[in-house]
Amino acid sequence: MTIHFSHKPTYSVNSDTPVKPIGHIQNLIKHLGAETDAEAVAGGEDLYFLKDNQPQCVLLHYGSIALYRRGDGLVLYSQTAPFIMGLSSHSPAPEQMYIKTRENCIISSLPVRDANALIQRHNLWKDLSYLLIFTTSCIYSHYARLTQRSSYDIIKFQLEELINEPDCVRLNTSTASYIQQRSFLSRSGIMRILSELRAGGYITMEKGILLAIKHLPPRY
Image 1 (tube, rainbow, N blue to C red):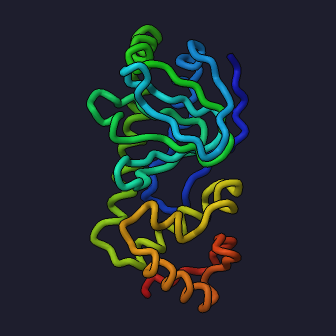
Image 2 (image 1 turned 45 degrees about the horizontal axis):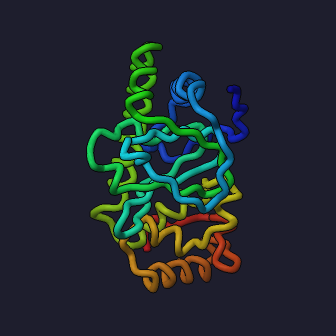
């Protein structure tokens, strides 16, 4: 099975953002994807890590997805293709998380135990280690920016994240909802700061959609 990637790798301007190991991820997908059938999944669909009580890993060939925590619906992090989620599923964690597609995607999946067997067979441990280090670093970086900071610092960070999202995601996502799903801030507090940033000419929004960031002040 050959998949042509349409999404170009993107990197944040933030120097502390982990660099995505595109080559290692593509090599994993090349070998693991050969044992699966990729299918188109519409945007807004929920995907789960358990199938027939077996932990699954999800291969993202095209599109973008977000990882949600059950219970409070908090977005843990999001990624664009190519990417793999679920290879670290060795505990009850798969029952506590789920994936939501953020646009039309091409996705395949296979049991984690089968994926590990293929990784062993093709000696893909180096590629796996790069993927897991990147994933862990992304989650750590995300939460480091959301803890022990002011509401404005959190909103500033999320605005920078949102403006770097693919247009098909950003232009169909409420700015306030995007921030609220990724933090514990109140909607009223988010709306107040967004309104003041917009009034000050720092950001451009239309009908709740973020169109541009002109300049975000370091202090609020």
